[in-house]
Image 1: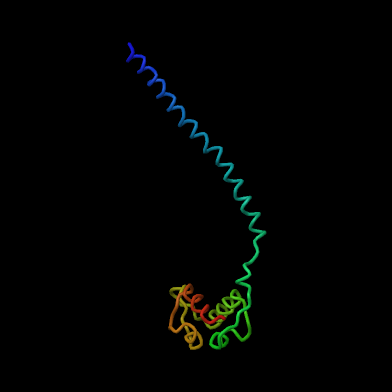
Image 2: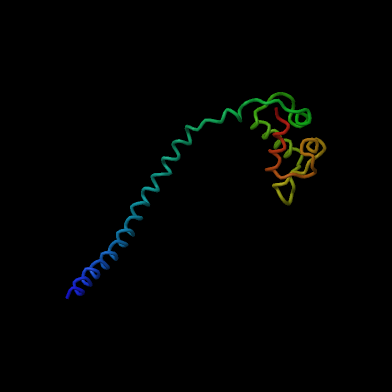
Length: 130
């Protein structure tokens, strides 16, 4: 009889486990409205974001880079904008693969290559900033 009593509580525990997953399924339904509220919180801090001072610091440009964007100290952000203006004005972006930049004589002095990717371009330009 002692074994029969031990088996009975085990059977009662099994239905309790089945009831627990039903509660877990109800919980995600409650989380869904919480997720909708979260993006609203993320939008508010985006307005408070200030630019990094390191990017806004005016930097001296090398002579080869000055031939492309002009003389004078520029912040990094402005240097990148001016190089892109030059690339688009002279149609130096590759027609097939838009990520590649075909260098003309002025840009070859900066890039040291005939063609570079747009991601590599910023790395190479940083070498011409002081």
